[in-house]
Length: 318
Image (tube, rainbow, N blue to C red; front, top):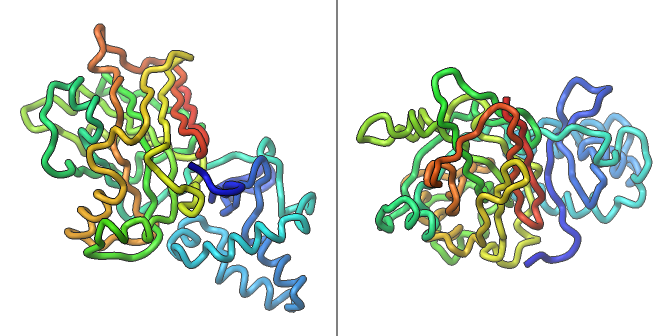
């Protein structure tokens, strides 16, 4: 499923810095991309002033500025990876993973879209019919939190459910994309929990997707963006949601009705997709509200979503 040593784009901070920086996760090493690119340019003979100027333009510290550059940054990430031996242990350039805090890799996307009823077994457990086309909804970007931040239970709902999901991050502006070309526009993949207030979702005959899924902290995301170059078949991803050490969802993503290519093709017929746009691809079977008895998140719970090859997100519920 994976090709070579994986690289994940991450957003991170350290105890001595009060800002988040764009980084690259390789094994258990975090590379500060801006600092590493400055160092690389210095070693190429650029002056300190010119190296700094170029690095802030080409490899910005702000993660959204970096991601908005899309697929153009990928060759530079490979160059930094290949130069990594020169950075190891250099203060302010590389860190051990346990020295940093990871933040959401796409904290403020232009579009945060979700897909409903997109796994066959999930459709079966809900008693629904297979949709003829993707069911598309949006979430408020203010729902996004980091991979290990707390999910805060709202006062207005007591039926908070989990939905582990594979996430597509778009890497290139596109419109009217064919299925055969769709993967050429993917920057990479990450993980999200599409937390949902079921009593709000089903409060009337028309599902309240946006409101029920947009409450603050209802979109944990991370730990980073696995570059699409390292994935030779997204269908082999296996997703698990674990609640208090009990596996609740366990499925290969090939149970999707509309796959990655289908979703990009479908959405790009309606709208221009931009670098940094995020697509939550749907959740597999095993959601809490369809269990007997139903299972909803409560204070003190720990919910984890993991996808082999990308990593995991793990959030305490308060």
